[in-house]
Amino acid sequence: MEQLQTSSDVLFVLLGAIMVLAMHAGFAFLEVGTVRKKNQVNALVKIIADFGMSAIAYFFIGYLVAYGTGFFVSAEQLAAGSGYELVKFFFLLTFAAAIPAIISGGIAERARFYPQLAATFLVVGFVYPFFEGMVWNGNFGFQSWLEASFGYEFHDFAGSVVVHAMGGWLALPAVLLLGARRGRYHKDGAMSAHPPSSIPFLALGAWILAVGWFGFNMMSAQRIEAISGLVALNSVMAMVGGTLAALVAGRNDPGFVHNGPLAGLVAVCAGSDLMHPIGALVVGVIAGLLFVYLFTLAQNRWKIDDVLGVWPLHGLCGAWGGIAAGIFGAQALGGMGGVGIASQLVGTLAGIAIALAGGFLVYGVIKVMTGLRLSPEDEFKGADLAIHKVSATPERETSW
Image 1 (cartoon, rainbow, N blue to C red):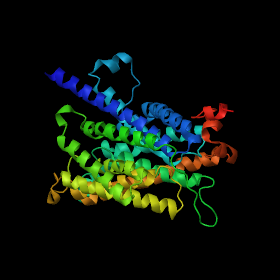
Image 2: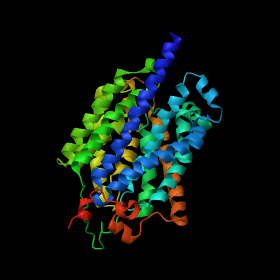
Image 3: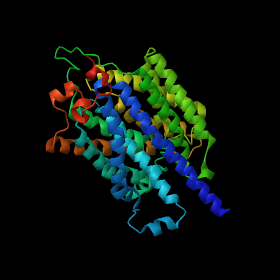
Image 4: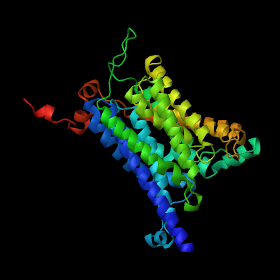
């Protein structure tokens, strides 16, 4: 029976890893549908190349930084156990690789390819696992200090802050250092529209992400005996709350409507194992509104050209999720308890600070050393032809 239990846990985490791996197709198609046609090939190549670079960085450096565990032993030794630690690495790798996939959407259409891959290696090898280890492995006494100071550890069940807020706040320095796409904003204050190239692809990406998210949230239990139906129900309620809020606030705009469920799912990750479903619904509604209004404000008023809105979607909604776990996880609001608002606030702010510092350091150094941005000619031509020498619509180049 012990062997059956162990094998079940291995399969459980493996299936979760596969579901989160599939989410990267969602990241890809969400970006493909949002960018202009001349940058669609680049969006697809970036996501899969970033995953490859993330795997190398996390295998050789990142996992060791976060958990103090490496793979520098013989294959015989690696295979001697149940395989649980190996599939756990695979599962956590898919989380780590989500960070550059998030950043990719913010810097789309004007970032150079290989400097971005170098940034991916540094972010996944050093910046992300530094905070991941603090929260999920208790590194540097961070959780112990929070518990001693405020009575509770920082609770982030499935990564609202550890993954999503980190990704969104890492993306913000990259977006600011790159600057807006050429022609996006004019000196007289006017703004040129860069509409999505394919609403169907955008919608497909959102659906793939939403489905894979149940592996992201449910399998964060990491043991089959710890699986919780509450996590599934809360994920559904936050997803629909975000969808309907974005539908209303976004005035039926399909881009907002399809990002609304993602906003709700980002926000519910941290406390999905604690909240009452009504609390999760409220969390999703607030996240949907937060995304719509802050995306509009950032683009129109602050002139931050974050192409997919990854800072409001992941950065702000992820931070809201970390704080919301301390609010709606409380027993007074129908939650399971065992969480405190002060610890959630401090933990969330720590994640934001590390992400901002890491983002400015990594992208700032690369900008100085090699440059981050495509030349004006290559940006006008599009990343597809400039970098990959092929278009997503080759019939346009071959037709008479």
